[in-house]
Structures are given as C-alpha cells and as structure tokens.
Image 1 (spheres, rainbow, N blue to C red):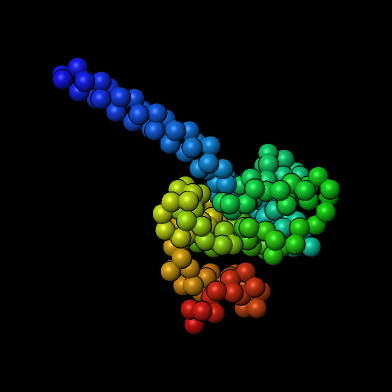
Image 2: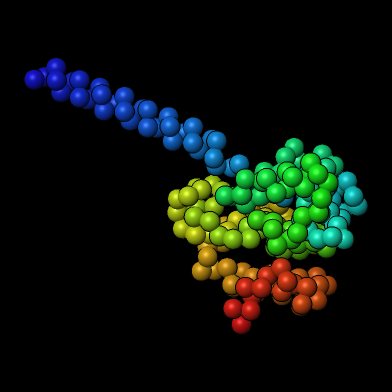
Length: 193
C-alpha cells in the first residue's frame, strides 16, 4: 500500500511538472508577441533620429506605422498588431508595397505627436479590447493596452475606456489637435460625455 501511494505521488509530481512546463512554453511563445512597449520604444527611437517627430504618412497611420519596419526600427510587424491579429495584412502591405487602411489596423497610432509632448498622451493603443491583453492573452478581464508618449505601458479595463478616451481627447486638443481630429482617434469619448 505504501509503495502504491509513492507511485501516485510521483505520478502527480510528473503531471504537475509537465503541466507547468507546458504553461511556461505557452507563456513565452504567446505572451509578449505583440508587446506594445516595444512599439513605443521603436517610435521613440524613430523620433530621436528625426528631430523629435514621430512617423507620419499622408495616407494614414497604417502606412506611418509601417515606416518603423521599412526603415529598420522594428524587425517585424508583430508589435504593430494587437493580440489576436496575425499580422498578415501588414506583412502583405510591406511585401506588395500597398497602403494600409486605418480601419483595418488592429492598433491605432496617433499621428502628429512630438516626442517632447506631454508624457500622458497615448501614442498607440489596441483598437479593440481582448481578454487579458498581450500579457495574459485569452485569460482575465477585457482590456486594452496603450503605450504613452513617455514609452510607459498602461492597461485600461473596458469599463474605464470611455473616460480614458475623453481625457485623451482633452489632452490632444491642448496639444493643438482639433476636437474633430482627436475624436476621430477616440470616438468612444462621446459615450463619456
């Protein structure tokens, strides 16, 4: 009887180690694939090399984001994509040298900001909320990840998103954006009014 208990105990330990290993492999392959902070650092580096000006493109922020890859500030499009986006649209745009419609991007990039601006302004954010965001993809509450101008990352729960948008609109207006242009980036701000 004692040996049978030891076998069960050893078997349980083996199963636990295998499960733990599987979770760790999943964590390192799935999580951080779309790290928004990496995108923020690439934007800051780009601005540092371009007199404090972030990438801009006359055909929209989708093409502006691709400048980071085209000019070597990012190795791939992965961090330009929110969790759940495989990046195929942006990869095709680079391969075929075609434009990217803003509404097709899974992350929204706020064009027109300067690196010297107010650090609380959001420069790029997930267009749609995901469960757990990039750091706990598929698990946890519905949220969006945002990267602020100072390169810090913030997690905004879904229920706080309208208030976050309203604050960003006010700060963009203070930074010189028209209210209409600011609301184009943050249409959910209207729900907070």
